[in-house]
Image 1: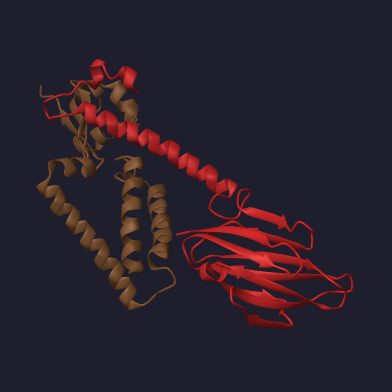
Image 2 (image 1 turned 90 degrees about the vertical axis):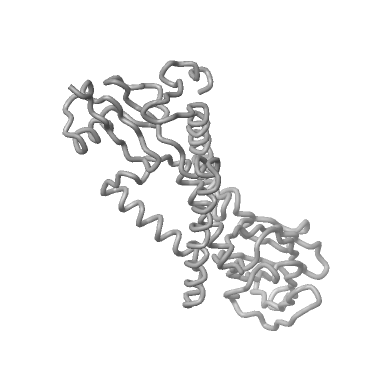
Length: 172
Length: 148
């Protein structure tokens, strides 16, 4: 756009209105850059930069494979997203699981299914006991509503297994 | 507190977005522009009020929006620089019957837009009959005919 600034069409006129074409060219430049920015935001939105998409959906496992967490990395304040925690343990028994870290500060749990056999608060979050099936598998489906703003680090702790660390970001 | 911040952030965001969209975006409302405007207002309303539909919250949001608007108009009155930043400046598009093509290209306008404004405001039939066509700060095209 700067190469054609010398074009006679773009010289400032004084009549019937007083113009400042250097300024007007900057305004047009801003409009053009703004358009690129809007396209970039649309593409990022499609990719899931602002929740629900390729960039946002995470599927992580603990090192020993006993815990698997599927969740959204990016959330929006006030909206809900699901999280699935799968754990393995002894068949037909209860497995202890702790949701620790900043999760309870940034999110509120809207639903928790199936209902855990027992639940209580702990120093770092909440501790749940879930029932495993005949293969020793247990799934926990959680609906999280983002209440906070910013970055939240949390952990899913299974005694005797290494913590699964989650990082989630809540957009305004 | 969050209602005021919400309203202020939305005012600022919409202002920047409509600056990017340019002067013409909603100046001449076509049927589809009207639909677009309604969709934008619907999306905005949700973000402004959140899940709080109380009278206090809606009044707080409205008061904030009007306060910012009046505040900005006072600032514009005092400073020519701010006025120019927010409202922009008029730009000449046709000079003595000739289109200024470079300007038209940047302003994303075509000859048909000028002729439409010329017909509706001055009853002009040909480009040569236009002395000046100017895109005003509000996005409308004003036409000054040649005197013969």
